[in-house]
Image (tube, rainbow, N blue to C red; front, top):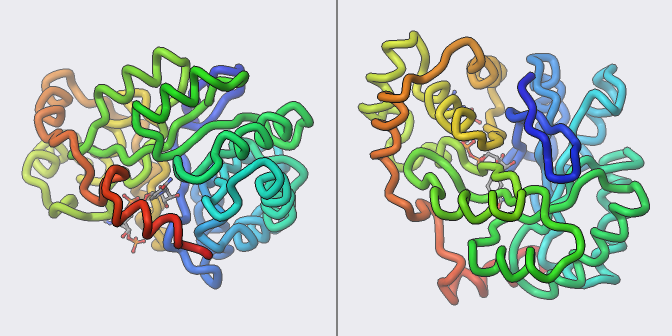
Length: 280
Ligand code: NAP
């Protein structure tokens, strides 16, 4: 598996498996399927309510802990130094492990500076191998990165062919922060899987739209964590290392970029209120 080196020297697989919207009941089976396909990196979060399912799969999969790379995230309701410390302990218990490979602040709201201090402490104590953030747009990202001791290793943001995050990626690079895509298929929005450009390019390589979309992000050095509950799609999404998009095809995909979210705006007061109340 191709890896990226994070700013503290640790290696992270460039392709992993995400479990957002995987039900607690299905999560263990899905993660075991993904591991059997070859995925070694799993992305979960407290707010997905399925950390236990990931933990059960880790315990049952037959691999050593150090063969897997586990990411989880601290939700807004656990923001602040004290609450975040408890929340990290909760995640470790649910994941049934004594360390987390990558711990992220899920959203840039509430007392995330307090959360980050608790994460820095957990990092120094060896409970976490790397720390970072998620959904931090350039404004909040720069403010945080300028004011913490340990620079974020990763920022996980909505990144796909329709929202390529070109400017944000440049800024993250200045701080040595790795971009990690969420929603690499935009969850199917905007007729993703029948997009003419992606279908046409896929035909040239004998690859599907999903494979072309993942390959594009991988060639941009973006970490991807596609989600599927179907094993055949997990296999398809994993099979992206035997071809390379030409410069011309990459340029054509670059033109699909609308440079805006297909989901929501973190600058929309209504959405901020919704997030602050989620999980209360
Ligand atoms: P996604 O990976 O862009 O899309 C998932 C959707 O695509 C599902 O409906 C899935 O259906 C379908 N799909 C998967 N592979 C396919 C294929 N080869 N052909 C056709 N359809 C396919 O969306 P996502 O789950 O939102 O994003 C991926 C991961 O990013 C999440 O699981 C989560 O770990 C992370 N994430 C993080 C945040 C954040 O705020 N940090 C937000 C969203 C997501 P089936 O499952 O039915 O196959």
